Length: 424
Image (cartoon, rainbow, N blue to C red; front, side):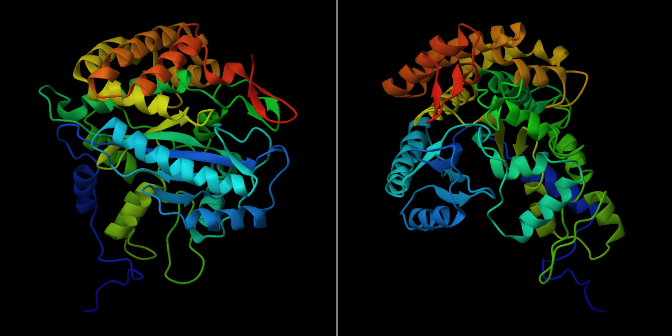
């Protein structure tokens, strides 16, 4: 008997094997030891950001960037966004220093080409334009187009700061290892509100502080949702991943299939048009976009890209301090836990808490109160976890300018004829 043909993607797996893999590979518990960051940037003309850069000019500049000896992994998103993904670092400052050094090198090359990086959750000027011709993005575009235009905007016009932290140690109690998982989902709405930085599209205000978050929410009925964080995370995530629609069925040759409504669980049970494999499961996980994604560590994906050359350091520093300093984590857990009732009716990011965070930012009273507590705890914790004086000063300045008065970066931005500048 010949083995089933999987198209060269490995050996078939059963439904039970897939569930076991999801439980094991997505939550690797232990003492928090590492931190990482992924920073995405829109790339615009240095002097005329409202003028769209020709694709050939971007491609030539990106070829020069690719030649740099970077410590971070360098990728380019479908619309030409530039992304740097740090290595897992042992300390916050190791992560910041390494990423900052790579950013300086990248920006120097872009500057010689007359280009600059722009920190904004959504492109404030230009409609989506896909530059990458790739089977993955062809299939993603076809799949997400079924739910409307949000998919193309997400792919080509959005940018974020993603903070990656260890899942944490096993703890006593019914949720066991889920404390940091729960904290990530409750704190996530506070992070959305505090760092909201995408009020504009096509040069006009959208009515959202984080229009990027609204775009992600509109991708499709399931893909951006979070499983119930108050359930056992391994069981909840396994069920969520298996019951999510398959974005594409890859082929070694030819165009990839883009099934309509086929979940990974249904694919496992039917084995058609070919049996799914471990490689298919791993790939499927990369097509799920919840605000907190478990990948052996926790990937917090809800923070808009930040203004200024070093603005990305503030959400990284604050989030790391609140998770990895035990005293700060306990303080913040107590502060955000009451928000669970606010968020109970629907999964994030569609529950009232997350919608309020994206639409109202820190003008929402409950989120403002939580943010004030969170930043105070972070400021006390940063010195304990070895943050430099410069990083602590940046967090303190952000706290004074935005958090204490109930503002976010979206509240002090405007379009000018030359650049997207802070209001003074």
